[in-house]
Image (cartoon, rainbow, N blue to C red; front, side):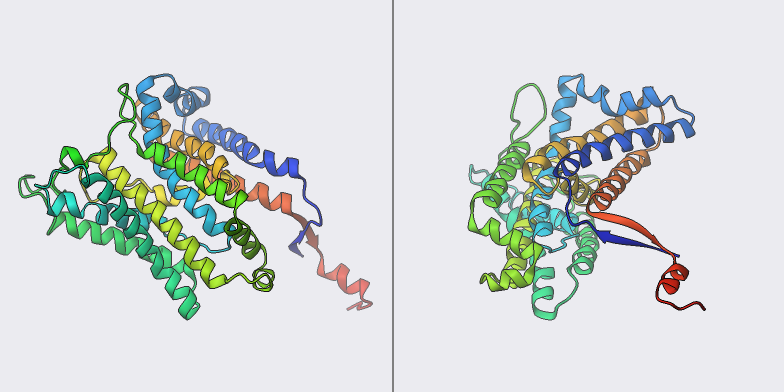
Length: 364
């Protein structure tokens, strides 16, 4: 006996729209079961996770801060995944973007100019794009699997950041703490509103999502992404280059991840330190699929995943659970999103080998 997946000849558009909502409902249900097994009141725990962070103005600002990098990275990843290029290394591109964007305020810390922040943002985007170019080059030149190369480069970037803030970029007046100099005022991403800490990184995320949505819906390049993602052979007949698409999708994805990295350290942290991300680059993969690889849907899914981060921090204090609960919620969400998609696109069949032999006239 074995289980086979048979692709459905037709799929329901309604189910495809409802799939993320079903996955979210199942995540909440099984999350409640998890809290009950931990000895916590499921209703109170879920309230702390998903409702309480929405009741205060300051927490809404924190929600925007956490959603900004998730949306920016996921929008870039959606281009990759829709073109059938699997960039798993956005966390590394995020980190490199933060480092390259920080060159000016750290090495030229006495420079005060209105040009400082725009140059930092551009350098962050360039750093992320160049780091994403490594797996693109390896794939187009040597046919190397981009999943492995982009993932392995994450750990190189993280180790490089750790070495820099403990070594050549460590603040000489920082009492030996592993962090860089604090950025000058001109290097700090300003707040959007006076009522809280939410900075312009959230605006960058919304603009990027709308821009990529427009590209996918109304331009020839967007049509090229869809065609090559569904059938590389059909794309070649149409005159599209699969190698060119590798470069395009990876560079755009890396640039947006790099922008997210420099926006995070400039707007929220104010300096470099060994850890600048709770795993935004990996969580953004969930955001991309929960948003159906649609940039506008990614805005909503980014806010949902940001809520798990913010709610997890609050739940640690209010009900006394581990910070690992947040990762469990995110893992459940990804599992149910992929499971729902699999059941929508494929029929599950149980095949009994003995029955098949009898049908063929083999009675052994």
